[in-house]
Image (cartoon, rainbow, N blue to C red):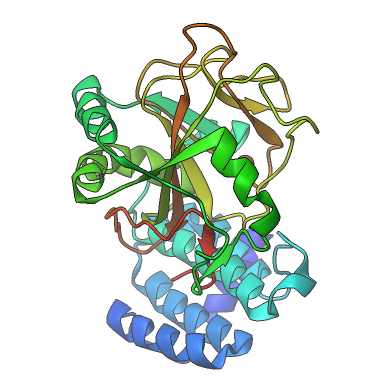
Length: 324
Ligand SMILES: [Fe+2]
């Protein structure tokens, strides 16, 4: 039935639009200024109509579900956070634009879908040892900087009202400043992750923030209140957690509420549905030789082409207000 609707929708299209991506980019820039959800949907659907028209028929069939997801999102935006907290346009654009990108990627045959990720909502792997060793060498030289409540990023949704927590977080963690040398080594790791991550999210992607910190060993390995949370991000702003020193319950990791502990050798990475899966950080167990838990958190957003240059938007920045 959905496939039939898909063909009906496009059979009645009378206007033909080019889908030159530069034209789309121009449209999106102007929509970013006027914040008009109807205009956004119109521009994206017109672009997609042209992509559908030009796609080989077998791809049309294979991609019908992705296109239908986009069509269904027109009136039913995802509710990923308290809608009263942000302007509606932000939630709406984060709902429809990633769905547009998935349909675009499927229609153009850009990405194979990772069925395992779709079923279990996470995927993990290990970065090759030479790359992680080089990166680790650069991290050992990184400067420590404080996390400051004043350092919010105007283009991002941030950890707000952080003043009362500033002292606590600077006590339990050490935040690392990533400079050119660290980011260059990280870029090579992101190249290795390019296709595995695209298969999980269904489209190419871009980096929107990289944060890195060490958590000190503790007697109680998680927050006193239990530490369970979801991240409250738009569903399509996701995190890759990279554990350059490896991860386990003993040396520190991430734990899902199902009881699953992420475990693996140096270079283990995890991509997960951070706004769907309840999870918490597990700090290293306090003992004489215990070391800090080292974590690199890479926040990504779907994109129509890969942009793997690491970006540091700040330790308080969570996800960009505009999804493109
Ligand atoms: Fe989290």
